[in-house]
Image (cartoon, rainbow, N blue to C red):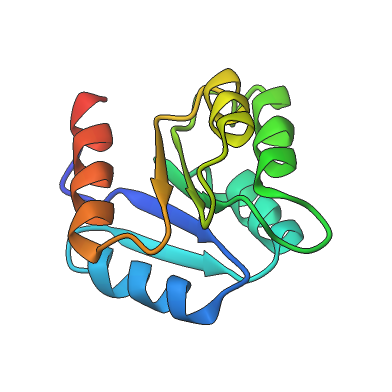
Length: 125
C-alpha cells in the first residue's frame, strides 16, 4: 500500500461510539462516520474503504443486513467487516461468522481493543 492512509468507515447509530472510534483511529487512518445504515451503505459503495466497522443493532437496517448487502456487491464483497454489539448472543456471533466477519467486538470495548483489532486486520492484507 502507498503512504496514503487506509480508509475506515464506521456505521453506528450511537454518537458516542462513533466519536470514540474516530478518536481511536484517526491518527493512523482516514475515518468516515455514518449514523444510519443507509447513509453508511452509500458511503461504503462510493468510497470502497479498506475496512468497515458495523454496529449490529440499528434502526431500519441491522448491521447484519448491511453486511449481507455488501457481500452481494462485487466491489464490496471482500471488504473486511468488524461487528460491534452490545450483546454476544451465539446467534449473532454465528451470523457474523457466516458473513465472513473479521472480528466481533462486544460493547463497551476499549479504544485500544478497537485500534488493535483494526491494525491486525489491515496488516494481514
